[in-house]
Image (cartoon, rainbow, N blue to C red; front, top):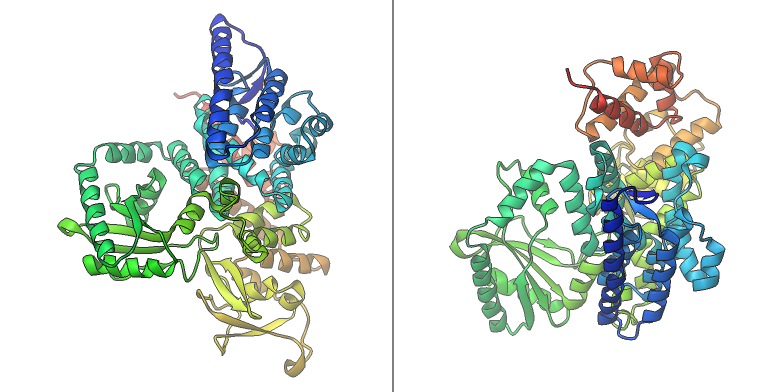
Length: 583
């Protein structure tokens, strides 16, 4: 969807000229799109792309983006991003047509008739719900619809990510408040989704665009740093040359080259380490042409050449990340006593690290030998999300649970002989609810690594957890969770199931005073996401009156009950403050 879209006709000679010139360049861009696609898929059906473009251009004709460009430039750019990613023809056709059903008279039935059910399914999966009918829940309902559609065809998510990337690249035409809101939403949901799909090709640009709009001063500072690094290229060339010699000595056939970091990655490490200037270590990648055991031989060669930094080695081959990323990471003291990061992986690991789930479309022959189990593992997290979706009637609750599931800081523990992925700081109660609501409700104790542990004990990576329930030797205790569990559980599933149990049993779960406190806290958290705060509650009281509430407390209760979204209130508060004339 085009966040900058605005139907209409050119209202000035400048806009009309811009429209004509852009249309001509768009037509030329179709040829570029076909060339890009065929460079990766030589036998691709260029006719289908040209036909899809003609229909899309015809349907969107007269519609402009906020920048004044013809609307068709957006779906064409999205298709180009996907072509560079290496997606198949069907995905590119869907990308060219992805806004037609939502924004033009072209119907889903016509799309199905003209291009087939597969393309129609992909387009429908990324089509937004109308805010007129769904109100404040429209965004949450749209995300839920997209995730459900992706359960059947993950290309729905990949199209959405490319769509958002182009929108993020062209946000400058919107207001500051809109840019920050969209960038924040991208950071909260779409960037983590991109990470789970393992598509670094898109994630790097998404994260850099988020940084550009949310932290413009930091972005500018890092840009200046990258542009003016002294002797950077020469130093990396020397590191690469020495590494190649060491690898040949150990008879390891590998490609070695610089692996530059993107702006967001530099900014993240700079902030995390509290550095006054951008923290950006030189980095190289060693791509081994051989079995994964050669990666460890290469590691020995690198450590034999340069002294490793203690505590800076990570083995993501033996223990892959939750997005199945595999590689060896080490930091060494390289030439001139400078720290250098080294990544070591096979060619297959390198492709997967760059393209993630899209590797199956970019390199279909190379991945044809994958087993059904391998393919299932790639989207195991999505299956977990879809299982929870069936238990979550409210779209807003589903979106909150999704954000929790996509949390960057996670741990993996073992329970009932299988791995369980949880937010960092999770407890045995979180594990119990992951194993099923019945086990969670009846949980009375736990063993962690063979020893009894409190139900509130934070778990660590790799812990083996056994859940004890209220039966057998422990007797038939009172069924149902305890209220205090809500004070320490971390997973959205556990929080939702506990709250639901009390709701189903008609027991008061919270007082009005506590709801007021929770509502105020929710608004405070939403404000902090925008680095804002309230000096007084006067703006909130004014907003409560405008929304028809008798007093501020009633509005805060509605926020606690999730009848009103805290993010929506904050957007209105920021808009009010930003538009207020300066004295």
